[in-house]
Length: 257
Image 1 (tube, rainbow, N blue to C red):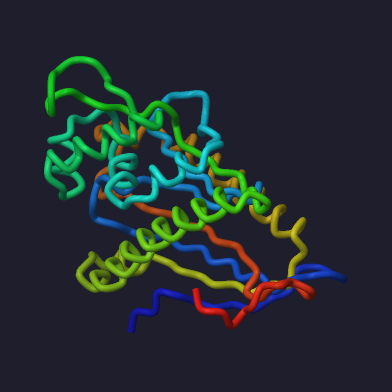
Image 2: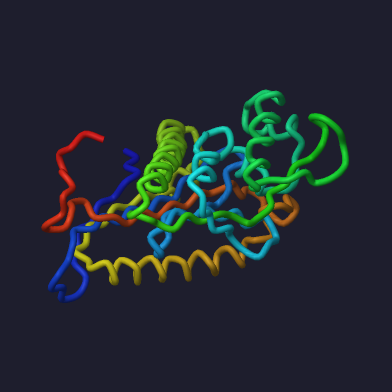
């Protein structure tokens, strides 16, 4: 019987002030070639999404809630992901993500309006190629800004729905994969008692690990010839968060969301 998730309970260090923190690490094996490695919820308490197929100065730091709202659409996120493999026309992008060229053209123009993509030059109309302007984006938390917080939460929910849909698809399809993939796929859940600084330390170590993997496998993102036989796109997700609010918090843990 295949069981994707394993569960482990532990405690790190001698902690005086702590919160119960769930850390979930998922390796999701997806069939579609447009599913690229992504990094989310960085140790700087922000949402960060990095597409390593783009040569730029690094992720763009978002500062306007309108930029967050511009990203909060599944088609736009899919387009950003697809463009991580290099410039695409609206028609080409549509074939990759399963949308019409008309739909992709509209959403590409909206992304361009907020500076996430730009025309790559050459072609006209739907035949013109588009490319990402930066290698990714980050949205540092601003809890004192209600408009920013609402927009940030809306984007987080779209991203979580996207991740969950892909994970569910893999769980449904896993038995049809070759045995080596079926056996290699992993999902783990760990429960620790951590301080915010300790959770940040955990995230920093994860960042170091991912940095090494990114450097090692970078060429495979845009160059199919660099991929070994049998390689598939693999998605890694890390989430670390308190499962209950701190003492004295005005958050109702039973409130419906």
